[in-house]
Amino acid sequence: MTEQPSSQNGQAISPKGDPIPPGGGSGPWSWQRIARRIRVPLGFVTAAVYLVEVVRRPLHPTAIEWSLALVLPGLALRAIASGTVKKNQELSVTGPYAYTRNPLYLGSTLIAAGFAVALLSWPVALLLAAGFAAIYIPVIASEEKFLRGAFPGFDEYCRNVPRFIPRFLPRPPPRLSPAEPPRDSGSTVVSRPVTQAATGGFSFGLYLEHCEYNSALGAALLYLSLIYLRPVLETVLHRAW
Image (cartoon, rainbow, N blue to C red):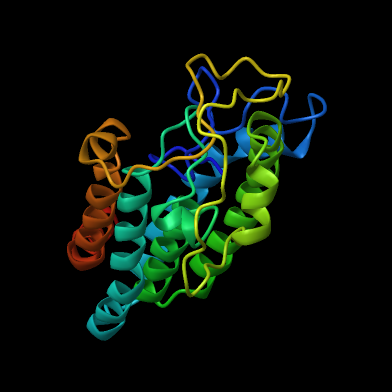
């Protein structure tokens, strides 16, 4: 599947860097296109609700500690996946992709759930759940359509590896022809030679290329906001009134 490591799975992107490949929607108002348009505004809405909840709710150190049990694995999963996937070149079936077809999306879900726990906020939790469902479900469907057309072995991979909830044990990589060209998927996003299945392990160079360190920086800033932003906002609001 394919989310950009800066946002989710990572195996196929458009020339503009969008995780929804060309042709993924069936018209100007397809849900895939709508999801692509609403994700940024939805992010601002979530951030606004988050700030309100930060001010409104008292700090719970225990909740913040428990949230690390979700956030740290989520960051680690995204880091490993981003250092494994080679967009538009290989069908990634090793590393975290041997357990789930969407490790980047799963990692993002764990991170978001962790911060909902840290804040102990049902409004934030419900907004995050609705946003993830509204955006990721159509995006994943669009990416699967693209990958199914680009890689003949994708159906076998889907039979062996779950879409989201990971397996407990990794599935052996499918026996695929390493140099077989992709099918015509009705898209021109594949511009370099494509191999059927990835065989390499983690690459720190890929991790840096995909700028996945931004996820860790973002998580650190959110934790700092939980600890230090509330007193600052309270002071500002007190002076304003």
